[in-house]
Amino acid sequence: MAQLDIWRIQAFVRLASLVNKLQGTVGKKDELVDNLIRVLSNLPPRPTDKPAYVGLFSVTDVKVGRQGAATRLQELVGKLQGEVNDKDGQIDNVLRSLSNLPARPAGKPPYAGLFSTSTMLLLTPQQILAIAPEASTSRINALTPFLNRTMVEFNVSTLLRQAHFLAQLAHESDRFNALEEYASGEDYEGRDDLGNIYSGDGVRYKGRGLIQVTGRTNYEACGKALGVDLINNPTKLSSPDLASRSAGWFWSTNQLNGDADNDDVRTVTRVINGGYNGLDDRIHLLQAAKRALKV
Image (cartoon, rainbow, N blue to C red; front, side, top):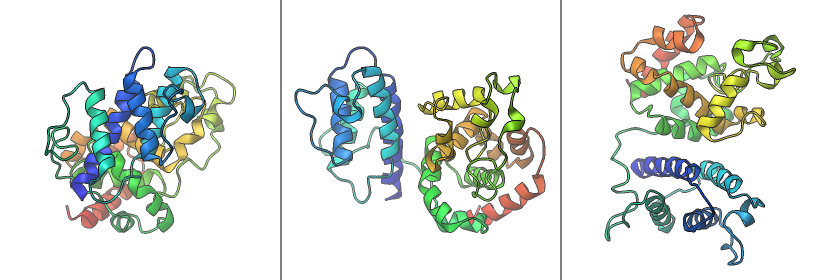
């Protein structure tokens, strides 16, 4: 089941990326995406007189509709559970269509041929709680699916990478208890280096996420990468989903998998922190993570 769950996450991530790349007027591929979202959301079929996305998002601009579809697909990650089924087959078919690939060969299960076999392990709430036992159990239960999805999306794919990633997140987020910084953000007001050029930007774009994204410039870059408008919706970054994915984006953008492979906690800390603040605690958490994950 773990392999199927990983393939499902990879499929949704790729679907959202491919929808964001669609161009031109609404077409057959948009209809396939609309129909897939309806199936996955247990909604009635699209009325034949309705263009794609109109009935889903109450929009007439196809570009806005595609953005809504990509966001909805990200939200649907993890909704598909259990054994492989017809919905997996439909996801596979839409992926192949959007990628201009041949139809799935007869007798091949969904996703086979689209994604390679992975040896990655999906983690349990109990493993993450073992790293940070001070964390709220309900918070960890809520975060775990999104942390797993993030680690698949950003190739945090070995136990050593996962240990470093989770140890740093635990430190940065006060043992996963703070998805946004406790301070008001007023200290960031007028910080040109963060892109805070308008009144109120300091508070508006305060640190949010499990590795705190801070400032208008970083919110814009993160939102563009994740396909979410964070400039107009900054508090979304403190949701369990985007708090996790933004940390994965930061980790990947700064190529920290390589430093984790080298078991280099000092470099990982310096890149995240800008210095070595809290290094002893980060090392303590890394040791706990290695024990929990049996690294």
